[in-house]
Image (cartoon, rainbow, N blue to C red; front, side, top):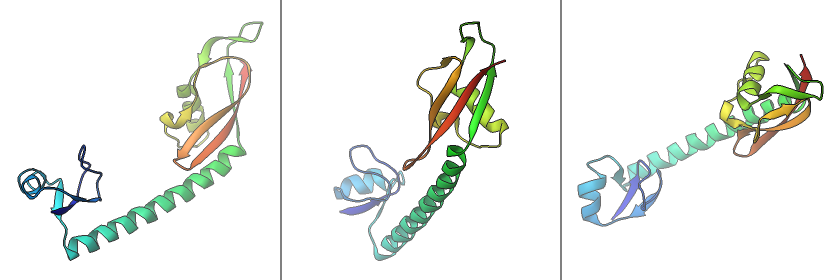
Length: 147
């Protein structure tokens, strides 16, 4: 029996896929838990419409990410921190600090998308990678200066 999965099901498939399963499994497990629905001409039309909507939303998100990338690539962020004489910071600059500084400058970026592998522990100029979309990555120039 062919069914369309409403949600991801382990070892079966992902949401939106058409898969073949045994009739008893579909009737006794998938249908009662609303994990799948039978393949009909109406459900196929709905599936195609949902795929089209999802594709259009993905394109819109990618365009927004590209615009934000252009803004970030031409932007330099400066963070002032307390430092010793040999240019080592008393603390460190973390992704949270970069997130807060970007937020203060008007950039709305998820903190988890800032790829700062190790905290910054000295003064200088750094290039930080920011993932804006699965296909779009920006490079942010960060200046860490003495307070």
